[in-house]
Image (cartoon, rainbow, N blue to C red; front, side):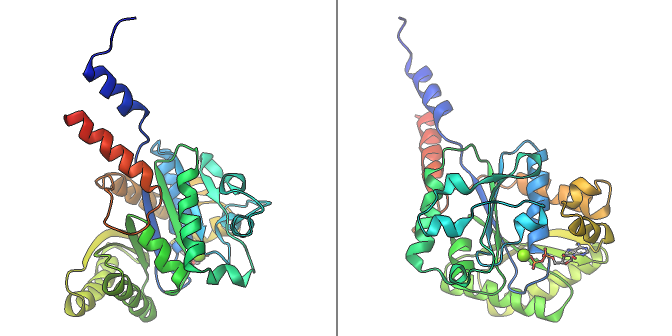
Amino acid sequence: MAEMTADQAAGLRRMSAPRPVRVIAVASGKGGVGKTNVTVNLATAFSRLGRKTMILDADLGLANVDLMLGLQPQYNLSHVISGERTLEEVIVEGPGGIQIVPAASGIQGMAELSSAEHAGLIRAFSELNTDVDVMLVDSAAGISDNVVSFSKAAQEVLVVVCDEPASITDAYALIKVLSRDHGIRKFHVIANMARDERQGRELVAKLLRATDQFLEDVILDYMGHVPFDEYLRKAVQKQKVVLEAYPSSKAAKAFKDLAAKADKWPMPRVAGGYLEFFVERLVEAQAGEQEAWI
Ligand SMILES: Nc1ncnc2c1ncn2[C@@H]1O[C@H](COP(=O)(O)OP(=O)(O)O)[C@@H](O)[C@H]1O
Ligand SMILES: [Mg+2]
């Protein structure tokens, strides 16, 4: 057999190295601003861009993602925490081949997991043998340990706001806790249920004024707005994503544009120190990258 050159060997190692996974936590502070809709629709749009997409329903005690998609999973994350099922066994397939990790509904203990349980769950993703390019994490409302742990373990945090004073103050409080106490500096922002782009910008400007004044070093990246759209409500009633039920609606178009934007973000690098989702894939992909330069 012919011997491989060093270049070929490095090339082969690179091909077999896992790809890094882009993990985006969707959070808001306030409930009812559209996190779950943003999550399922962005996931659908990513999947249409050809990305292998996964959703983690991290509203652990009040599952919404499966309901929003009309799925009835037999098992969920409570079975993973109790040790009855592995993470791989609770994953169900949603529309467009999206892989869903379903949460439990009405199990209060799930909303109050210990830090060891959070760490166990986050590490369990590293054991998965599945192809994933993007994972969206649908967070619970509030600033509980669940929200903080999963946001820290993601590489990107996307904050959803809408035109209500409480939405802005709660988003500010969330950003304050994540930046001041947990070292997260960059936040992407979507203005949901906005009348138009101008109102979306005004809304985010309010948030920006507060963060600029009181939170040094925080960077807000305004991604754009999703219009208030009756078709989105109709889609929720039908337990379908608006991108599928009403593909030519304004909301569907906005989600497609936002996913295309996020798809161009630089690929995640390993951040310093704390536990991250799929961290091994990041490390290995980075090592492969370095090897290619040697
Ligand atoms: N862009 C939008 N246009 C119209 N209604 C919306 C929009 N986004 C969200 N909603 C409404 O708000 C409700 C709450 O959204 P949801 O995604 O469940 O919020 P959260 O996950 O933040 O609690 C939805 O069921 C829908 O009726
Ligand atoms: Mg929700």
